[in-house]
Length: 268
Image (cartoon, rainbow, N blue to C red):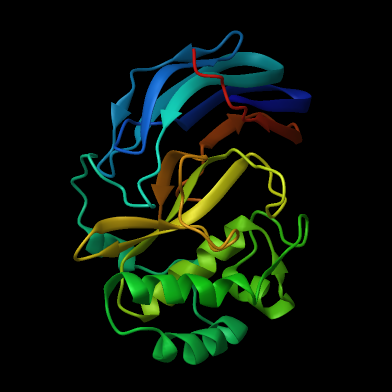
């Protein structure tokens, strides 16, 4: 993985502080072999695991700052667990992920989709979760640029177009309507020929099932995460699970550019 997030300011910033959810954690489906986060002139604070098991790191930069690039590089060994998240310690109750946010609010066209889909889904467990995921795939045609970072699931369903973020938000809403805890997951995808065109930076949803625990569903690609996926972090929605969140002090306007490359490494 090589992930670069570059910031440029039309006026120098006096101070920048960020919280990073940019480090994968080990579990049954992935093992971190090496991983590094770097930014010239930045100071990194101590890392810690939050209650959901995600690795959090803080970064500060003293100004004046005209531009800065956060570079993530690393290698992760992955395996297919059929989307089931295992061997990962969490202390937050799954019930926390029954709360609706602005992005997952079941209104308008999304409410109509819920009314049509939830009652028809299988009644129990894994088949029910799969049916909910399938119900989201077709109503939101994948189209890069059709929505933006602050778009809601209801807006994406209304226009019938969106990206992986919108599929994840809509699936979370359907799961909530079915009484199932669900959360947003950010990460990386090794795209291969013939699949839905995706940027390497990716998102999907996880649904909590009493029999299995958390299980991932990528409605954008109509599958469960497998060995092509690297899981970074989670939250109630995209904003909550953002890989980088922060604040800057100064009067400048920020320009942001993100590039992500995920490549397969040959076995030695």
